[in-house]
Image (cartoon, rainbow, N blue to C red):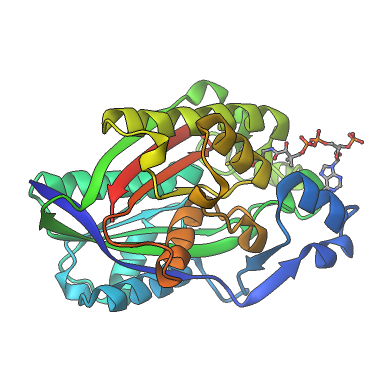
Length: 326
Ligand SMILES: CC(C)(COP(=O)(O)OP(=O)(O)OC[C@H]1O[C@@H](n2cnc3c(N)ncnc32)[C@H](O)[C@@H]1OP(=O)(O)O)[C@@H](O)C(=O)NCCC(=O)NCCS
């Protein structure tokens, strides 16, 4: 059986670090509040000259190098992002050009914080269908450009970064075993960016009201996120006839330490089964899972044959999981 196997990982975060102490100087907030409510201590912020495609390209170059793959060998590039360089065309096309991936089709997936798993699923399915040999999947975001830096409810939570994987078609037991994707658009206004698409065009009034900034009802999102993240992880295990004990490492979307802990508790997972780095990067939306995966991989936290589980939840709402044998 042909499976999509991850043969290289990479990540990139901007140099500039913004700590909670830095935020205390510009907002009515405290390191203590942010740390206890979210687990976040610092986040990385893109420099003015950096674009989402730049972060994505650096993460991709690092993944290609680890995989020993030349960009011209790629058949397919898909980027999970909600903060692309332009409304259109796709950021994936800019990455394709930056890398010189002349043989690759390229497009973006918009599924907010679930974007990386959605992107991974499309690439894995294409590989399994025999239509693609090598794919580059990226999660990349510059969230700090769509948050309102005067809104302490939201701006403390987010950061910038990118992570990437190279997938290769391989025979055997290793690779992606399943993906599950879900959505519920009926509650989209609990977490969304009202402007500026075709529903609300830019105007001086809309700009003055801050309609171009991310808006969130944090309490409501919290409850749905915990339930959805644990349900979709369990769905992945059930679909593969596995239990929580079979999982060597859960790499969850890094939104908030309380969401991660509540989800792990609902799943009966032990602390050492869950990878956490939200303290250093905050919520980088579609980039959290590939950044965490790259860290775990490069630090020797993952061994051949390990069972890895990814789960994510985000605006849409969307939620998703992927189960793989490393
Ligand atoms: C955002 C979140 C941390 C807020 O925590 P909470 O315990 O729900 O806090 P509340 O929203 O009830 O606010 C409690 C108080 O803290 C205040 N507060 C909010 N942000 C603050 C900040 N950065 N610093 C200090 N105080 C803050 C509120 O104004 C409120 O004050 P009030 O009681 O005087 O009105 C929490 O709801 C959460 O994690 N939600 C999920 C968000 C998320 O991860 N979204 C992305 C999913 S992909």
